[in-house]
Length: 97
Image (cartoon, rainbow, N blue to C red; front, side, top):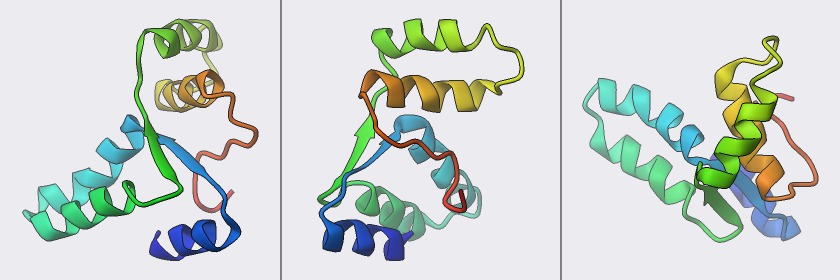
C-alpha cells in the first residue's frame, strides 16, 4: 500500500476510499494486537492525496439503489455508493484490478 501512496503522490492523483476500507484493513493488525501496524494503516490513509469518504445519508440512498441488484455484495455496494456520491471517475475494489 505504501508503494501505491508513493505513486499517487508523484502523479498528483487523488485516492478516494471509504471508511469501510479503513475498517477492513484494521481487522488483521488489531486481531493480533499490533497497534503500531494499525496506526500505520491509519497514517497511510491520512496522507496527502488520500481521502477517506464517510458512508453518510447520501451514500445510504445510493446503496439502497445498488443493493437491489443481489449480484453485488453489500461491501461492494457500500464502496460503490461512496464512490458514486464523490463522483469518482475510476473505481476499483481491489489493489489488483
